[in-house]
Image (cartoon, rainbow over the protein chains, first blue to last red):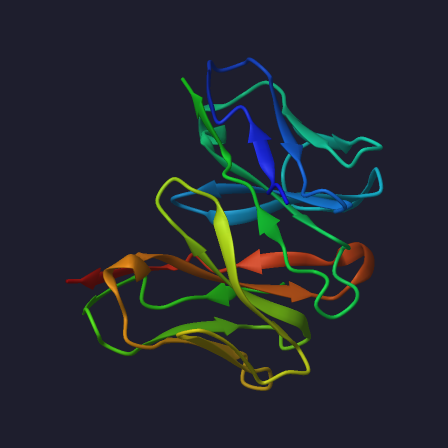
Length: 117
Length: 114
């Protein structure tokens, strides 16, 4: 079974631009979560989608947004990029958003490394 | 607000040593706790998941324990190998439903010397 895939793997943008990152979950998984990882703040939760609905959102400004499609693929968008948005963006999928025992292990993709110049 | 702490931030041990990585969390009302491994520049690999009703989980040379009342978890690695060198993160899932999310510690970077 193929794992979580993220595209692109690397991205370089300049301040003020916008960017869209893509995540394809493991086949059959309907829950997708996004995280930002930086050396200073560590891994921080951005948002979680399940069945095309945003279930939860972390403490990030409105410049960060996401969506999920009917095939469970998800995208996140960052508008008006700032230098501080440089980070590794990780996507994780699970079969359900943390309900039944044993069903909510999160499987992570390799991440997209975003550099903002 | 849930906070997860992992101390120390880095650890270096000689090959063959048994070691324990610690994780503490402030809110004991967790749904589960998960240990991950991250290699440099890569995503996270799930190692062990412990449900709130469980005390420990084992996989090969790894054993994770959970003490909800004291807000602590440990990851025990037996007979460490250079290939175990990586960053180990613990994460707790608090609540279920609409507010369910994983809160991560900042990780412990482990170096196993040959």
